[in-house]
Length: 88
Image (cartoon, rainbow, N blue to C red):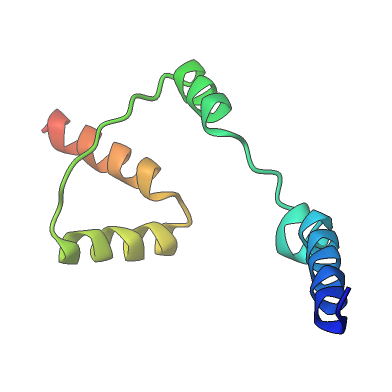
């Protein structure tokens, strides 16, 4: 084998080890993400239904700001606002 072939083999071996390594906790290990199927099951059990809506950007920005100010999620905020609007 030529020296360049040996270097290529070493690089491939090193890249394989790097790709197989587990990322540190600060990047992905600490965040326990629920897969989509499990999340849908949890949402269904909580009585939540997906309801996609298209809104203009200024309204989305205002909703995000209000949700952060109130310390709630955007979903909870929209749920409360729609319930209040439908009452009156």
